[in-house]
Image 1 (tube, rainbow, N blue to C red):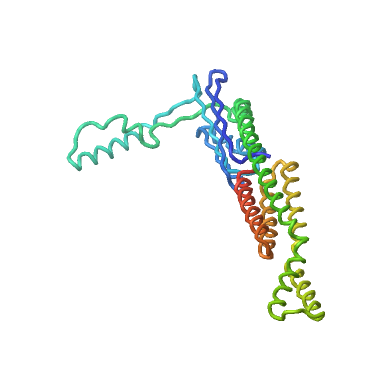
Image 2: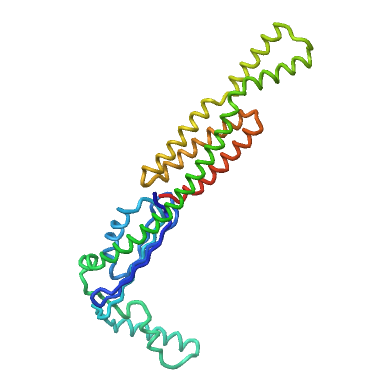
Amino acid sequence: MKSMTGYSYVETYLDGTFVSVEVKSLNSRFLDLSVNLPHWLSKIEKKLRDYFSSKILRGKVDVTLRIREAEGNISVYADTSVAKAYTSAIKEIADSVGLGGDVPLSLIVSQDGVLRSEHSSNQDEYFEFILPVLERAFDDFEKSRVEEGRALKADVLSMVDRIKDSLAVIEKWIPDMEETFRNNIRSKFEDILGNLSDTDEQRIMQETAALLVKYTINEEVVRLHSHLNCLCNEIEENPAPGKKLDFICQEINREANTIGSKNQDIESGMAVISIKDALENIREQIRNIE
């Protein structure tokens, strides 16, 4: 189980070229991959995307590639006609507002199209060149996600244990439901009628049976145990259980709400509150799980 949150940074020199790769990610329902690289390597962006999207299922992932060559394979060209056009236009503006003097060279060369650069490296070969750095960066990134995933797993399982403890409190009350309902109904009948006849006893049994049908929680308890087992199995066996865990938590919450609505016991009511609190903590944590 891995967290969607991770980070890695790797830098190295390869044949006189400085290469750095930074990978960082946050939570997201789907894979949202952003790749930042030098403009002259734009043709390998798809290869970078394919590389990382084949290894990451979910998360907002930012990949940044930086390259600095000691001996660059870059050719720079000057477009003098464009430079002259900019110079003429800037002088015309300066004269119109009463400013004379020469136009600074730095202002001219900073305009679009005055200087053009071309990189002579083969981009497909360049991808193979930087691939070892990408692999190191991803390995470190993966380790950070796995480490945080262990912490998330431990916390989620501790919350599952808390739910099971609370469920045990509720289960202890189930055998006493019939006697509790019967005693409550008998007490009300005695307050109204005094001594009870056989007919009254029959009525008490009917009322008790009706309440048991209305308030029994056996099915909900069984389903809740099943959902908890399913949740634990997903955590142990599914390498990317995030979405499935969210669905399971919805089912757990539904059963807990039903038990709470049927509850007639104070101690069990507190146990239901404990279950919902633990479940909310689980749902917070699984938002970070891939």
